[in-house]
Length: 308
Image (tube, rainbow, N blue to C red; front, side):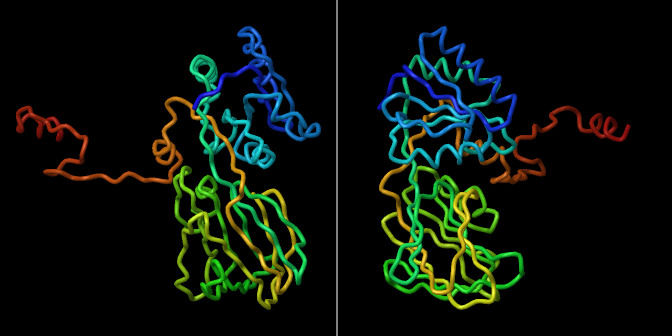
């Protein structure tokens, strides 16, 4: 399914002159092509209440942090996102700043091919009351405070006990977020099209508690057991709440996901290699590494050349 582009919301990284300048440049370029646009700095003004009806595309100029900040407003809106990478990692942004004209021209000519990505919904129950709730685009992290003490957690899935975990914490990540904190802690990389989520312990104590991958229709519950550590829940690295003993975190698939634009030429596995998530190995064939060409010249001359 493709959508045409008539109006674009351009959101720039907070306090970043490069992003602001590029935002104005893109807006002027769109105007020449009879496409309306508006440029706003992330967090500088209230989130537009007319987002769903007024815009066909939200373009984010910044790094992964800016993409996450914007994406947290997007579930259920039905407006697709595309990012121009001005950050260090840029795993969530498919457009290089050097190629934005070519990529935008293609999108204007062919329309938007939109792909949905799942988000997580969560709440925290304290006694009989839900004390806070929300959505996670990247991950939910249960972690300890400043003191180096273990966190004690009891995990269950759909009411079935998984087990006791004593560790520095726990990461629950979406496929989109699996290349963040989760993979650094030894968790799995999940393809972004998957309807599943990862559950990864952080430094489990004397334990073989391995990471899990759960189908999106399974619900995870994590109870905070008695511990001497302060325990916190961090959402997408941007929102923090204190967890108390006997609090229960409940996690499942959000009813509404995110829409992302497929950029022509974007290659997920090439990005994994480029960002260091996949290290290619070499294969020796007949004394040569794969890809090397055999020297077909006179072997004696070759030896002399090498020695000389």
